[in-house]
Length: 317
Image 1 (spheres, helix red, strand yellow):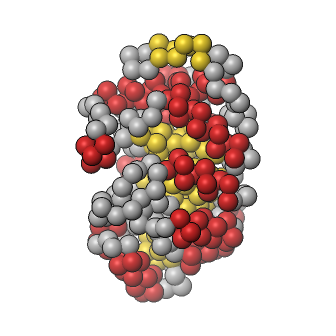
Image 2: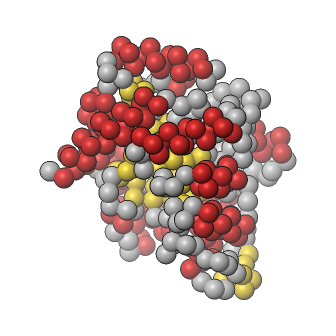
């Protein structure tokens, strides 16, 4: 868990199964370390009437069709599954993958999914209470033969989760950027914290908040892996990257301005490494490019074969 890792975060919307599988296989072929799905039932930041595969079952299929990639989901919504059900699903995928699963959890946010399916969506504070309990329950079920838990939202009574994880434990990621609640759950229960690229001053403030929560739980913040999701298109020149970004947005049926904003990196591999090196120095270990179908193999290749070696070289200095 100490090495730098590079990968794709590939929300599975507007794609058929074969093309989505090809996206993951391409990530593995070019030498990336990680691929992840998202936990949504309809497209986000696009026309919501389009197709979208369910995340956990698709992740199981991707685990069965790959050999080396770490297999993740960023992040499961706490309102969608009882924590014990999620714990058992995660263990199953861990065995399918040969011990490559990393599970992300979060407080859920997409109101349209809840509205259409009749899934209760309590106010945010309650969802964070649920997330806190969920994290504790997952850790219990993955580490004990029998687990008991009595919370305000979830209950376990002499509960089993057999077989246990193939790994010593499944790395548990918490996704989000809230300084009061999200980062407190990270500090208490998380093996990793996942968020999106943001200005350095904002990131520093969140790191300070995380350190304060870690002090409350007697944890060293350095124990917690940090992952950034970055919207990026990389080419040999910035002009080529801009053209490719606009074409990719068109193929995704998305407004380019909505995705290639100030938090995106559209340019050369050198520009990516220069922009992200300060974040590496601040402790980021995972850099994941946003890669919704149809994907962008040229950027994946640049990330794996140009950016990754350079940033690893800098880390070794």
